[in-house]
Length: 296
Image (cartoon, rainbow, N blue to C red; front, side, top):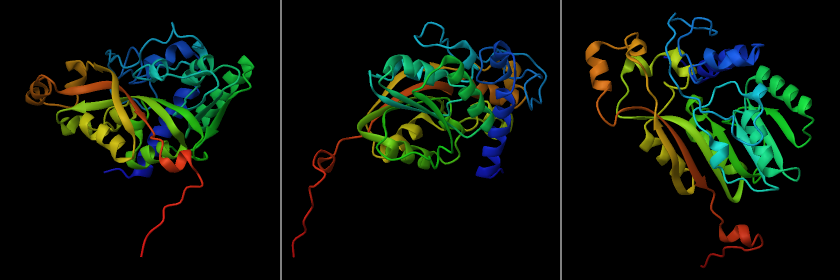
């Protein structure tokens, strides 16, 4: 059983290797989250030499602000499209990679807004900064840091977005607590992620390759929403949901024929969801000088 730090290091090494690939158009095919292959042997760290499609990433090409050099095909949704970003907003992207969602967010928040990408992989931060410099974007910045302990001030963001990252975080409770902390009162998040419906067989749940590819770190959809609720968020909504098709040619590497048949039962499997939630405004947020008095 891997420790949380070992899991983080595996993720950091994998995505660091992806960030250093030169040919952007080939990157998506080298990630389990990408649009073509989960088990391509050219992928850093791959152990299974089969090319099989597991389509997790969605197409960003039609979104305003899309920058192809920043699209590594590592997401599982389009959270920035659904995030209700307004002109002048401060937006934080958790697990910002090469900057894909940050640049889309910038197109929405405009010159008067601010976009901050947070990532724990130095090579990703370097690549994102190069992309921003090439585009001459002065209101987009990239910060190295851990989602479980963000080096960002409280009440910073109007909007938080994230794309297929929270499932990779070992301590999701801390990650959502930190998300709540950095949001302004009344602010909200829109997060695309991988969740499960029904029990995932142990052969998939414990596999490190799929963990780094956005699968084994996932939790049940109901548990995910409960985590959001427990951390104080309100107005929780599922903005989008779609099933991720995992071909039998992949499943048979981890599961018996009987386990595959069980996995294929209705309303069971791996899903991409985009979840919206809001940080509520409390009375003290509207009246900072207000004091609660106790009686004797």
